[in-house]
Image 1 (cartoon, helix red, strand yellow):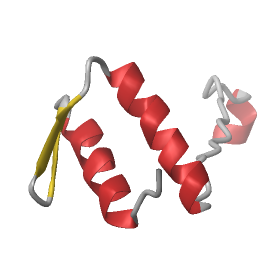
Image 2 (cartoon, rainbow, N blue to C red):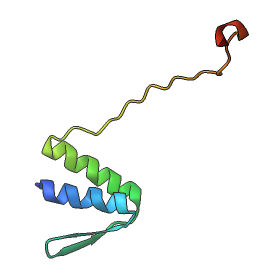
Image 3 (cartoon, one colour):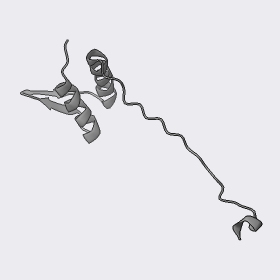
Image 4 (cartoon, one colour):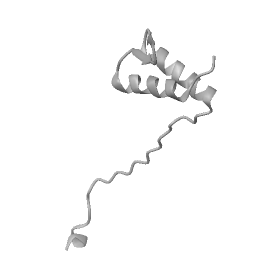
Length: 72
């Protein structure tokens, strides 16, 4: 099946909204679970050649302690 960018956008919006139903043009699709929606979304992305939106976060932590001599 050939997917369109509009279909992918509609599915991603439904996932973001937390709904299982997606309306596209004159069709209404109701998915059984969010897991199913994610699988279909990934299939659509692969079919359209759209890269996954991967976000990398680098965390840095500090205890906030310093030597008393350094605080003056």
